[in-house]
Amino acid sequence: MKTSISQASQPKRIGEPSPGAEDNRQFVTALARGLEVLSSFRSRDKSLGNMEIAQRCKLPKSTVSRLTYTLTRLGYLAQDEDSGKYRLGTATLSLGSTVLARMDVRQVARPLMQELADASKAMVSLGTRDRLSLIYVENCRSASALTLSLDVGSRIPMATTAMGRAYLAAVGERERAAVYDDLAALDGLAWPALKRGIDKALEDHRTLGVACSFGDWQPDVNAIALGFDPGGGMPLMAINCGGPAFQLSPAFLLEEVRPKLIAMVQQLERLMLR
Image (cartoon, rainbow, N blue to C red; front, side, top):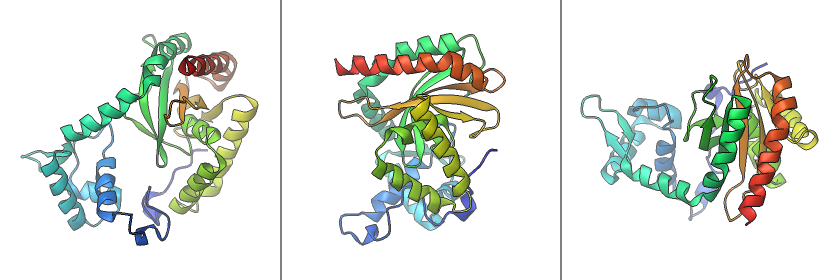
């Protein structure tokens, strides 16, 4: 059964530091809030108004208005004259392109990912963590099948997706425990069911070599994923293979795709060591 995190019952914002962090003189609250505003934009958003941003960031609209004004002056946001809404500015594009350019794993992984996408008639994506989400940094689609409408920059939840669960399987116990604390704080009522799904996926990752999400994120989406360390100082990542449930059954993903995904990640790890 699909479980969602209730936004209405959030006791703290995603990515908010643990209690006492604001008391640390090194922590700049204004900077953190500005980054929250930028992070509120999703890949499908053309523009957002101050009220929409305030709702997503759980900040007062007056605070958001000052932040969006400042970010616009600096080029991180651009304001539409007619609607008054904001879109990400060119300064954020330069930051993103710099980060992606440093991820050599994308160039190495892409041909391997495309080969798997074609063989499975699915979508294969590479992602890494951003707070309680995974962000796609590379994406390959099969040309011969229907796939999900996600692309580079898309953000998916950590707790219910195969990619997010595979990432949790690959990280150390300390980081995993911190994520658990944040998820529990986000929605205490939903957390027990979420944890059962994560625990099952971690066991699958250990015994089957992949984490699974069969209708857990969206009822009509199935996927498997594998977490790995690309080395070279890059963050931990995960690669998934998934798509519409009517096209990719759990049996097909586990019996046909799983060995190919495991072999692909093993090959990628060997290539990254060179």
